[in-house]
Image 1 (cartoon, rainbow, N blue to C red):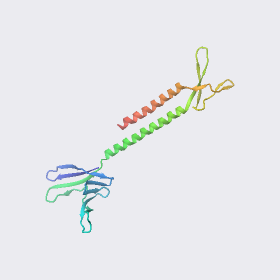
Image 2: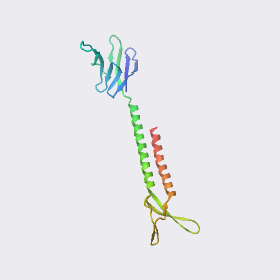
Image 3: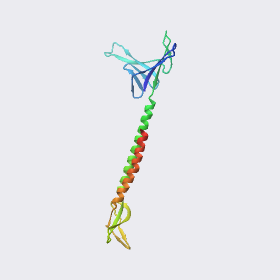
Image 4: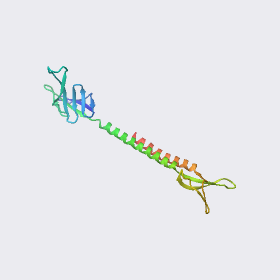
Length: 194
C-alpha cells in the first residue's frame, strides 16, 4: 500500500507521479509521519494538533480531521497545476503472496498424504513364505496383513503358523512407486508456483 501524489501541469499536459513514503498500521491507518495519517477505511486525513491547558503539566494533542479529498484533482491557487493524491494497494503482490501460500499449502497437503500412505505401507505389509526345494528357495506370496499379525501358511489341509516373513522386495518396490508418484506431484506444483 502506498500514497501516490500526481501533479498535472495544464499548460503542457505533463503528469508526474511521486510516491510518498509512509507506514501502514494494522491495515487501518497510513502514517505519513508522527503527526499525519490517513484513515484507510474512511479515506479521511488527520493531523495531530497540540492542546494547551493550564491544568495539564504534559503537552497533549488530539487528532483533527481535515478535508483532504482522495482521488480528486485539486487546483493549486494562482497556478496552472493540479494535484491528486490516491492510495494504491499493491494488489499484484498480494495476489502473488496468496498464490504462493496456496501452493505451499498444497505442497504440504501432498507431503502429509505421502507420509500417511508410506505409514500404511509399512503397517499393512505383504507376506511371503519360503518353500524349500532341491534347486533353490522358492517363495510364495501369502497376501497382506498388519505387521503385528503375520499370515499363516496354508499347505493343503494344514495351516502352518510362523513360517511367513515380510516380503521386503515388494515393500521396497511399493515405497519407490509411492515416492515417484508424489515426487512428480510435488515438483509439478513447485514449477507452477515459480
